[in-house]
Image 1 (cartoon, helix red, strand yellow):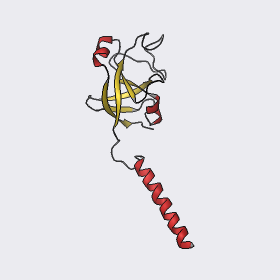
Image 2 (image 1 turned 45 degrees about the vertical axis):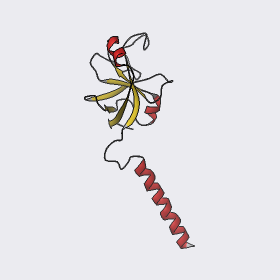
Image 3 (image 1 turned 60 degrees about the vertical axis):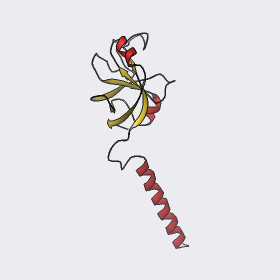
Image 4 (image 1 turned 120 degrees about the horizontal axis):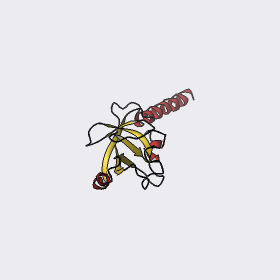
Length: 135
C-alpha cells in the first residue's frame, strides 16, 4: 500500500514537472510564435475618433515601434508594454494597442499616418517572441 502511494506521488510530481517544463518556465529562450502581421495607421477610419491614443491610453507618435495584438495573444502573455521581437525586422516593438475582437493570431504594426506604407506592407506570416515584460 505504501509503495503504491509512493509511486502515485512520484508520478504526480513527474507530471507536474513535465507540465512546468512544457509551459516554458524552464526555457532558456522565449519561444517563437507564427502570426499574421498587418499594419495600421492613426486615422479615424481605422481606429476611432482619437486615433493617436491606443487601447490602454498611451499616446502614439510617429516613429514609435508600437504594435497592436489580438486578444488571444494577450491571453498567451503579451500584455500592455510587453516588448516583442519580430523575426526579420530590426529592434523591439512594444505592445500598446489591441486589435478588434474578430482577429486571432494577429499583430498590427503601427505606421503613424503613412497609409501608403501600411498598404504596401499588406499581410505577412511572420514569427514573434516576447522578450520583456511577458506575463
